[in-house]
Amino acid sequence: MRVVLGSDHGGYKLKEAIRTHLEAQGLEVQDLGTHSTDSVDYPAYGFAVGTAIIKGEADLGIAICGTGQGISMAANKIRGVRAALCTETFSARMAREHNNANILALGGRVTGVGLALDIVDIFLKTEFAGGRHARRVNLISDIERGEEI
Figure 1 (tube, rainbow, N blue to C red):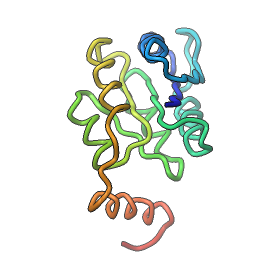
Figure 2 (cartoon, rainbow, N blue to C red; figure 1 turned 90 degrees about the vertical axis):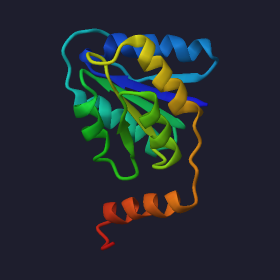
Figure 3 (cartoon, one colour; figure 1 turned 120 degrees about the vertical axis):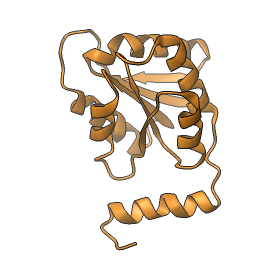
Figure 4 (cartoon, rainbow, N blue to C red; figure 1 turned 180 degrees about the horizontal axis):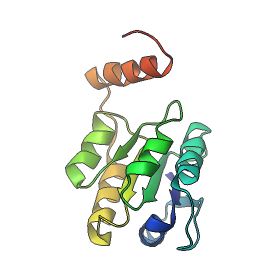
């Protein structure tokens, strides 16, 4: 599996822990930055992770800022991105299984490393269930195209 990571300064330390965790599992990891705790703008990193997903450069993405809110909002502006801010494992599983989320958003200042790694593992291992959920995800795509639902 190919995973793309991106964070602002508020998510840098958590991104580094996640990168190390994923590489130890033998996953292919693309790190789009940031590469320090120097202040940067989260929308650029949400855009970068979302763009990598849409271009097919990775199977799933993880985007991290201080709370996960801003970076998920930025990523979700890209057509085809379904970024889910998850603060516990149940939401991570449902985001993949029911919503076919392709980016996990996390808050580096609000989620501890141990819990974050559990959330990441669940998110990456859960498959989309399809079925009735595919119809609903397709409705989201219709909304993105400006169609009435």
